[in-house]
Amino acid sequence: MSQDRQDVYELPPDGLAEWLKAAGEPAYRLKQLLEWLYVKFAASFEEMTNLPAALRERLAGQFTIGGLRVVERQVSTDGETEKFLFECADGEGVESVLMHGRPHATFCISSQAGCRLGCSFCATGAVGFARNLRPGEILGQVAALARQLGVMGNVVFMGMGEPLLNLDAVIPALEALTDERRFALGARRITVSTAGIPAGIERLAASRTRPCLALSLNSPFESQRSQLMPINRRYPLAGVLDACEQYAERTGRRLLLEYVMLANANTSAPAARGVRDIAERLGAAVNLIPFNPIEGCEHKPPRHDEVERFRKLVAEHGVTVTQRFRRGRDILAACGQLRGRHAGHRSGGRGS
Image (cartoon, rainbow, N blue to C red; front, top):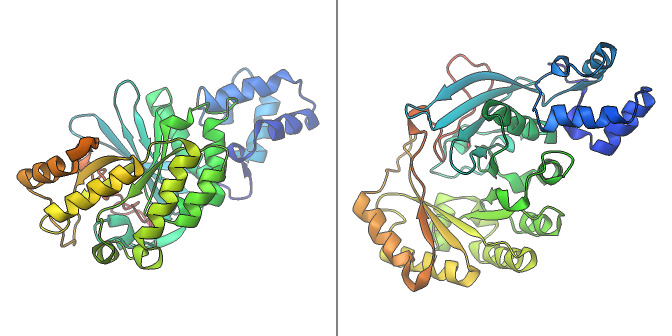
């Protein structure tokens, strides 16, 4: 894969129209090209059979489509979850997950190759950070999963990396996802998950896209959250919650609090009441995520009764509480298990 050609996903429709005009093509070619890219999710220009062969050849010489190569695809035993390992043009590895569901499937995509945050319960941070992904590499994951499924799904930025530390690429990707002439996905069908970067939350709120926002909370207590998530030492929870509150007010979006449950660690009654208080303040829903085992990690999954006790306490006063199913654990595709590599893959691919 050449790194010299421009990724066609990074060129907005008006830019493509100008390129086609300069190439001497009639105006209707733009509609044909956009349909191939964003409705049929073509993987190559050669597939675009209603375009002249000379134009296809010229497009292939000028552009790439997504800039990713599928290295490995794994399917869970129940067939409901698929994990894809992609290789970028420079050899870095990133992983994405396709979760089948009704009425819409969900695409869990990555925004970075690796992650520098080092959360104690996450496989990605354990193997380090390589680089930010480009907009085309983010959109290339979406297109590849849509190609596999045959239709667009909901998109969640919950894969490898911290999206708000790569907003220079994430915001253009969000604009492409919500653009009526491109992926045409409603903003309510897109969720960006963050460990809590106040300036990033403010910048996202000021963007045109305004997706749903999920905060990876994991403890309502500053000291414990700092132990679990070192980023809390730089951006204390109090300031993060202020930014989240402003995001909800500015966008009208209901926030989601994600809570990874660690046995005998963050599942106490005081912790549950703390989560409940934060949810009430923000008008947020809470998503409980029992810890998924990670090789070499000291944390353990909570017992069923531990989860139930915590859930009931959080749900007091009418807080909406859901529990994430442990889908894809057999292929290491569940929350916190992405690493971006497999045995024999040369990339130092990181994972989330």
